[in-house]
Length: 350
Ligand code: PEP
Ligand code: MN
Image (cartoon, rainbow, N blue to C red; front, side, top):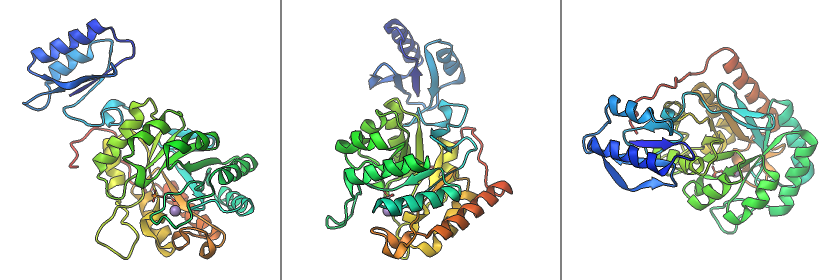
């Protein structure tokens, strides 16, 4: 059981609560006092009684009691009775709002970026994606234009009003990325890089947290918990596919993670069908499936000439395809053809 405390709680109240819970047979975990924000208790017998939870919750210094053994109390549905909506300029994701993000894998030149930005905006996107710093599997691939690319993103954002979503690959980039980004992307390869999670969280910009390609749903939510624990709850989860034994796609979009995440967390979840599929011919189908499953948004790699994109061209759709996909996603939502998942905490099988 985890007890989340309000800021400024007096030490005497922490002692009183600890004594009360320990008297009911609980053991205070070794690191029971984390930054004076949480108390973690362990019970050999499982869930706390409702009576005990009521007595703890009666303290004006207790924000919430999460239990019995959640590893991500701040982002869990038990922590909050409403869904979180994440906002950056006109981009609003979650709590019923759908956010569309389009743009190239990697920023190339300013004219192309502006052309893409204008087109995706006309199709309904409210944010432009584009990497200035790229995590690359091979050290010989293009690793992004760095500061020059950030300057292009800043100019195009100014011109179009779109929010900028761009990745910080290293703690050392966070400061310069934060000067331009409206949302900092943490890529799949960095999902469990806890230093970068904390550092990005401390900018107080919204964070788009991609699921690691070999990570479980619980590990992903624990990574989000690092960001929330650093004081930033503006987190967008992004399902981008996991590694399975299927070689015909780059990854396998775990469609189940979308409704499951909605049962487990108050945070919004979007899908990235581009990296999940690695194949532009199936990106619209995979993206629409995610929308139907209840995704709060899509992030799509888009380029006027996908074949000549500097990176990830095979999975990049063109501007017309983006427009068609945006229209179909909007139709699905307008016709109510999307799954809705309630906020009631359930006993998940994760
Ligand atoms: C990207 O968005 O271009 C990217 C590298 O994504 P991921 O971290 O999901 O592989
Ligand atoms: Mn990419």
